Length: 143
Image: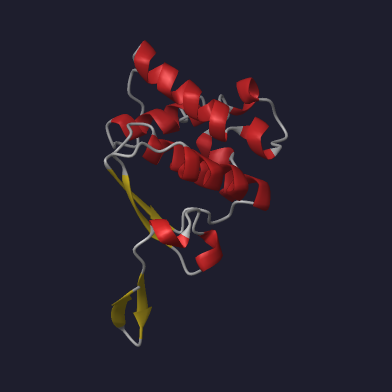
């Protein structure tokens, strides 16, 4: 409906961790613009241009688009600890490539990431940069 959260509104909810509309400052909009430029549809071949896509209702997006918006929501306030659980769920290969590039190259050195996945090839960082905890027979094994 007319009161549905747009893509931009949904990303902005990450500033306060409340999934409902909140007024934004110009600084908040500038940060959202940064993320949209780096992770928006122009980076993964979305059907609409950015200006159309960011005004779409979040609920009407494809599962992959929703996952991308939720990633931007998690990134928007530059948390010191970023927990990503199956972050690429529903994304197509171009979306995953854009998200991996951002995670690998654009996070601050002051940000730590807990990355949860069933697939080693989803991890965007080199093995030398990681501490890996794998579950083997119900036990955590660090490598």
